[in-house]
Length: 65
Image 1 (tube, one colour):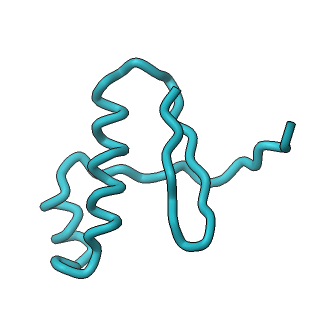
Image 2: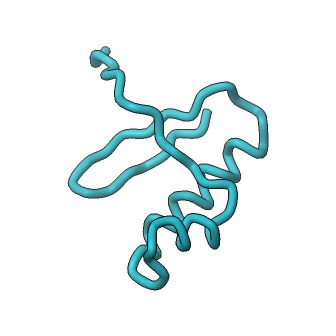
């Protein structure tokens, strides 16, 4: 087994439109918008207490158990 690193929690905004206004970015972050949508959907399902993710080569992937 690999050691699990403790990283800062991932911030998931409840509204992608609000996220765009706060971040002052509208068309540049399609990947981050999709990532936020996936994270929000996983949280709203409420089937799990924790969401695991890892960052590798500029990409972030979620693991839903």
